[in-house]
Image (cartoon, rainbow, N blue to C red; front, side, top):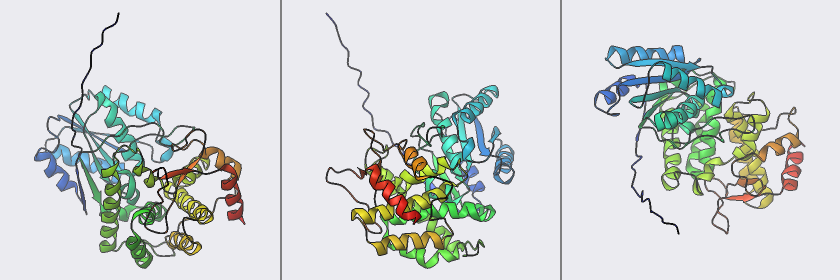
Length: 379
């Protein structure tokens, strides 16, 4: 004879938070903390990388201390290669050795690798502590700082280990974009173009008309303030519109993976020599051309996607050093793979996504079809 007991844990959780877009937002962050944005916190851990540390990490810690907040700086080597379980464990050990506990708050200052790693750390340290994101790159503004997906890379695949952990607030500092190398800025434009492709035809046209006011064809950073603010705002609105409906990626949120089936594989196979946005740009071209073959968009629409990526100074061809076999093999580690089948999400024209008969936004594509397309692209 056995007996059972029902554990009822139904609850409504409010994960709402604000996103502030502007220039030089440290005073705003300090004001928010003074007004109780994260109550019950006695120590702040500012987590950043080696590139951002002198520009924004150290100055923020000094400012926090000047306003009588207990704060320390923790930095790791810049780059996607450092976004690993090992780096996370090192940071956790450093926090513990400095007597950080459940009454701390993590402030992630930097680009996507920083917000991904620091957010994952915040989601698990002390079984979860509050965090803030201070985004200093266009890539973080477009993608990593919004939506609560955090994680690290492994030798097998990118971002397969992580948690959903929403920040208490996100600050997008447009002034920081002026400190970016042009290659990093362009990398962020790839995720921006992706958002336009999947949700907003009007925004796609806006980018076609104005991307030259962000970066010139010869690589000069122009960064027209009005255009940059509009890009940051549209990115946030598009991603919010998806995340609001599907916070934990059960179906709709897969559309944010546009270009990522091939793009993430390319990024990993290149040994992260390709920046995230550069790999996603090539992934967007692969999905668009595959979409033409499968009847989801026209050749002219795919040409427009390729042309806009090129206008932004992004690569649109698979590097000759990466074989089709290696690329396809790595696609099998994509998190959308089910029952050993590679799955893609596809544009339906420009500004909308294809939804399939079973209600899903992703669909299996035969390996032979993918290989044939890759061979065709190499010409």
